Length: 455
Image (cartoon, rainbow, N blue to C red; front, side, top):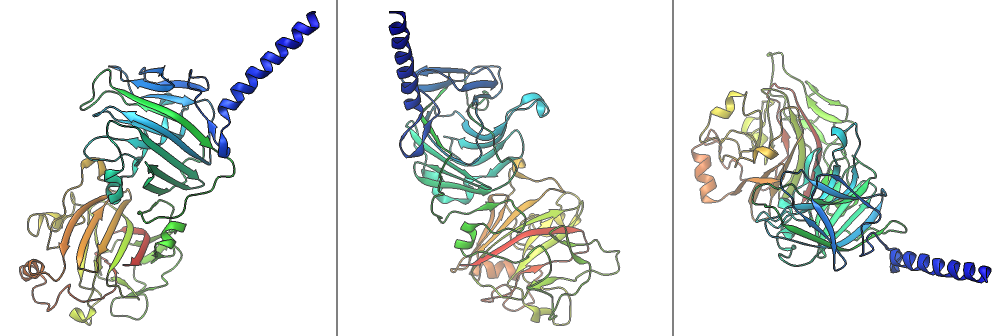
């Protein structure tokens, strides 16, 4: 009798175990991270926001006087595809952490790492990639027009993250939002954030999550799409960038594809390759103006680049350069994306209404000032982006924000040129094609990740 009872108990326990297992295992290789009943497999870190279970959903509720809260998986994940559904109150900010960490040697256990943004505000950055408590915004969806309408307010949204090697991609309701290439963190936990109360938030606001599932085996990346890529690897072209037609203008090793202005080859004066950066040394005061240009010419194109200034430095990226304007010189003339320390260099105070400041169309159109949160300190890398469309619309971008837009060859453009230092040059900035130029203004400046594609 006792043996029969033990056997019955064993069978019952086995069935319970199998039932629990079946709740985790799903079709297609997916594994459920939430059993719909409790928070087994999860733990809370940092803040004291409330996490409860209602109707098979995890409900996060804001609490006053507490920092950001995170409900974290006990397990860590490296390469994976994650999908979940979420619904958030208007005015509330939240996010889905992944490849995230919490260690005592980093800000006393502060959760840090990649976050897929939940942002129902007017800026519409849901699906962007933020580096929580570390580097800040890595992929702000300003550069992706598709991102503006993907998120559904006061409704359920399907979030998808693909983290495969150094490639991180996000989707909201099937719309591609972010494509980031980065190697900062290879693995970490997944967490559901309830943001500390700030701005328009208040106590008692809620966000709900359900159908949280992950796939870690036999994962296949989604096909490439057309959204912009932010690639933080040095002088590297990702698969999607190649598919979009980008090529490197600087290979990180030498000056192949470059020459001095009014020369057939490189000038060799103060330009060097240093640790994978294209660098111009500071002049001793005896000579400047050793500008370099691409051997190829470009008409309609998209050009992305990173630059790093030293204190008080001045340089520039010029396009539609016409070497006939100064045949014997070493400095080229063309439309210029200004590269400048606005605080310490006097050129920022010259010109008209700031049209010689950072990212401006030099001496013609001032740049719109980027939010202080996205202004980089001198000595940090900035991301520049220059787009010349087939219809002659031109855009200057700085760190994810469009700061200048104008129509080349238009009457307004011609009027601006007529009132500038370029007035004496016929057809200035109006050629159909021209090389890209990096300026030697006598200061130490570095460039890297120079990428271009024809449009």
